[in-house]
Amino acid sequence: MAVSELKEKLFNYADLKTELAGTRLAPLLDTVPDNFAARINHGDFPGWKQVIESLPALKPASVDLLDEVRIGEKSQLQEAEREELKALLMGLQPWRKGPISLYGLQIDTEWRSDWKWDRIKEQISSLESRKVLDVGCGNGYHCWRMAGAGARIVVGVDSHLLFNLQYWAIRHFLPEPPVHVLPLALEDIPADLGAFDTVFSMGVLYHRRSPIDHLYALRDCLRPGGELVLETLVIEGEAGMTLMPQKRYARMPNVWFLPSCATLQSWLQKSGFKKIRLADVNQTTTEEQRSTEWMNFESLGQALDADNPALTIEGYPAPKRAVFIAEK
Image (tube, rainbow, N blue to C red):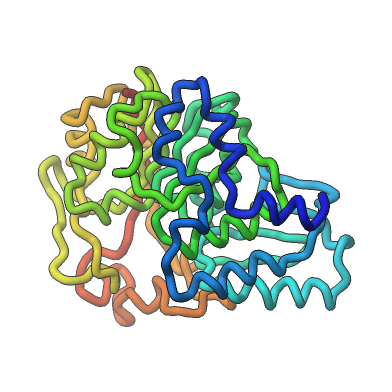
């Protein structure tokens, strides 16, 4: 594809709008902007945009989205060219979700998001030909894995602009994928859409002031019989037990509620879900979430008690995450 064609598609949602028209997802057309850049008013945006526009025009010799997120082959770039690519993409730090391989350049992100995917990919219903929504998708790492698993279309929403720019950096090398990340929040999705076959909410619920409202909103995005995949922080305890941290949890200021698994199951039941099952519970380790060259800020290691890593520095139980799968 020529450079001019790549630039024409940059930040453009025309392909998505065409795909949505005439489908159950058509109500999204009123929400999707014509152009990502048109509504952005952020001081760092010109620099981020320059990074995307400076990326080399390359066509990948091969792509793997099933077993990893790998675009292109190492042999397609000289080492000096790969260093130039690295210097550009470093301008979009911090990279939190990955890992991602671009023409032999390994983007070693804060999270080993592939580990999370490996824990759930055999637990969920097949994504083959499904319409999928990923809420709080970050740079779209899991969206690419969903596409690799056969999804017909994947819509990711995340209001964090930098993560959207990281998506466009990846998208630059795959100009016609079934993955579309939008600078939106769940609240921007039309009410009672009832159109997605599968909805993912991973690492979002504990950031919501009203978790029940979040569950209702997720349910309303699903068609009848559609599947919710919910991953969130939990605590040990019986039904009814919930931790509401004061000020911060693991250095994060925006953590509101950490339920026990039994409590979360009752929340799902009250929110209109059935066939609820606990698919996984996993203690987050400093091997899975850590500082790297691509995310050189403080990470989980600095959020745990140095003398007792079973606790956060605030004295709360260290992060443990559960995955629930449920049906509307």
